[in-house]
Length: 84
Image (cartoon, rainbow, N blue to C red):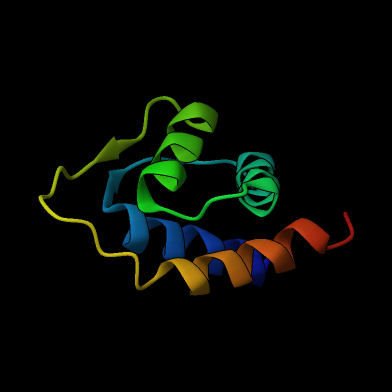
């Protein structure tokens, strides 16, 4: 459960999420999709999150900062590979 909490927090930071309420199952699905993704850009992460959790609200910001993506993917790998 701790890894899911870390993933949720990292997604909120990376994607500038201001409102959402993902279930554990949705977070696990997001993690698996992130791990399968061949590219790692913020727009891809935003699309995955919006696809799994369509009611998510994002802050629209100019410019793209991909610096947190490595951390996000590392957490997603842990969640995706976790038993359960």
